Image (cartoon, rainbow, N blue to C red; front, side):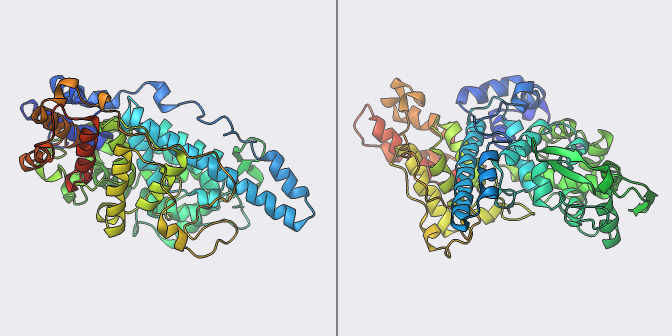
Length: 503
């Protein structure tokens, strides 16, 4: 066990740390006060207790169906004219691109509005862990179904999640499992299953990869509804020696053998700790957390409860120590100060510029974290886009560096993202911050109270006193009551501080 946080150490600062790491920030100062009153145990349970509908929402787009592109694909197959075929293929890519942009906006909107933020936080964690890209999958519907799988198992069984991912149609395409057969097993999924998903390097042999690949033969996608199907005739049912155990193993049995390896619990414990706490856990801490995973048969909710209840999670060294990922930064900005999520095209362009576009991880390892998010280009764009979110602007043009990419090949940019030339509806402008949703009318006439409340919202985890003084200086001398635009300018400057980039 980790060391439980004593009730005497629980306060609004601790509640703010929990809200930032287990979710996307507080929606109001009242939320922090309510959590502080609950105490650590009951506060953590508000994140872990999730209604079923929050883990299985309805399809977000009317055209996000398994057969949406069927008629267009039939036209492509039947066309004898090469030029017509290319145009139809281009049309399909463009429409798929539009769908994935809308799906991205829908997901960010859920992060902003959801009453169950830990579910979306974990779904995004699994998206980076089992990194799968639209660039190769090419199907918004498959990416949506995988997204649903991550959400459905977000706080459930890691064992069940890994098995579900092995049958996930997007993963079958991404790691070439869809064509694996007993005469020629494909090793891509078998290798990444151990190296990136469960064990890490050095805990398996090349022979284990080969034997595991045989166990996952016969996995296919049903073309009628894009669901998983198993073809027994393509399965290698012969004896396999895998990680020292011999049997006629199938894919699920291989996964069970993997999860019985001590390295698996340590690998997952380190990934969870790095995501939620910090990148340098002591080895004995990981051993203790791995023990929790084993004791709970890889059920995630009890292990997350231990993390979020631990004194180690709330240690001073772990607070305000993570650079917010672009997704965390945008979702938290909109959630914390009640901003509208931008138009789908604007949002996708911004996330691409910031270096983290959902459904397009850079490779099978997913995204790097920490200082990888900050350089002169991305930090400058954060500040500029943050001002646009607060002050309101016409939709920005695609980032400049997109214009410097090599010529498109096969309708895709050098980033692997379709750049559409098809006319689209006019992009909606970014609406300015609705000040009435953020501050009271009384605070317009009381700058000190206004700044204190805004600092508590934007820097909920121990805002430093000098920062509050600097913010107060920004409105000192302005006519009272402060105008809405003056308050927007203040908020925009606060969003552009180094402190706001940390959580």
